[in-house]
Image (cartoon, rainbow, N blue to C red; front, side, top):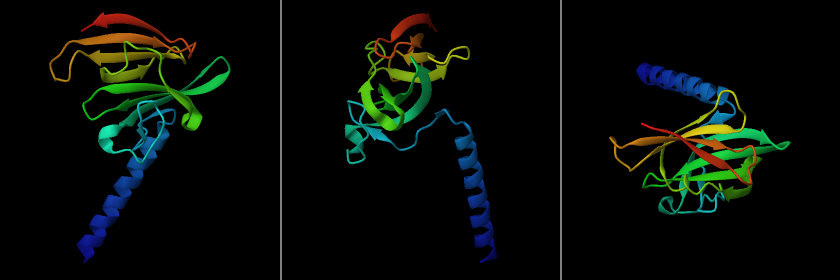
Length: 152
């Protein structure tokens, strides 16, 4: 009985530390179990196969407005990129067609800009495929610009 209590205490302590560290990332965190449809609208009633789970989200400001840039992964590994006001108000797929439905490996906010992100795209769903880095500029959220940086 004592070892069960001790194990439970250790588990709860580890869980609280993990939760605290996730919260401390603040603006750019894993969004949890938010399921969105193909129009970027949250919908917890969708079957998992019919939606995409948000696993990247970053808040940014452009034109005196606050936005959320989100990336949600479908079961096959492809992503839908979304733009919305905070709390998924007015969600819409990002108008950057060359990045939509791609196999995204990584998204990083550029350190010197509030509205620029580096998106690494894999040319396939395997482990040893060519990667291409793109710069996504959201300074004008209604007309995002995408620039190819380099192929790895």
